[in-house]
Image 1 (cartoon, rainbow, N blue to C red):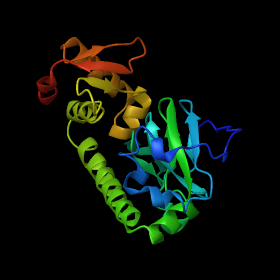
Image 2 (image 1 turned 120 degrees about the horizontal axis):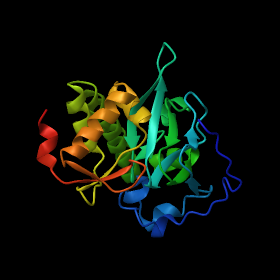
Image 3 (image 1 turned 120 degrees about the vertical axis):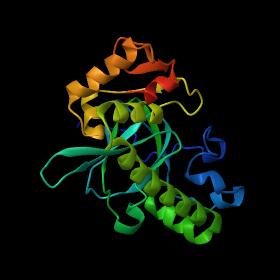
Image 4 (image 1 turned 135 degrees about the horizontal axis):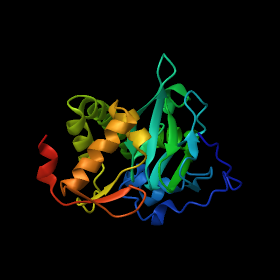
Length: 234
């Protein structure tokens, strides 16, 4: 993992009122009067692929809401292996567990170029008390995160290699264009699917040869899903 260097950390440059994805992120339910209670800075931060947003077990100065990009959540197993437990995308919140423990339960690492807002914990805690709307939003986000993590493991860690890769392709479709699929390193995919990297590469190549996926770049990251039904056949 590559440690981040953010010279502008905590400079307080966010404009939550005019955020382009505000309806998707943590402050969606806040009203104009709620912003008057925000006195600490909320930062807009950009991360390159491989940059670390949060360290597993590390102190959490704040939560992250993703404006763009994808971030993997990584947990270290008892035998020292790293397992990717979920991929976070636009509108997702990273670090909700810190509201209870004050620490991150997983590492968060950018898979693609990523933009995020970092919100100090004291802002969240204050607003949760003062704004019933935000408190309810927090509970919904927490419940959603838990269900997504459980569904992720259930869907991607059972079945044949073909079935696991197929489920992953379906999960990685763009919310706005269901034909657009973003994958990433086969090593990362293997970690998520509990498969060998070579097995993942073979299954993705087979989907391309069968005309199910069309590669759109030379790095094997972006694809167009031409035949969704082809994912359901072994």
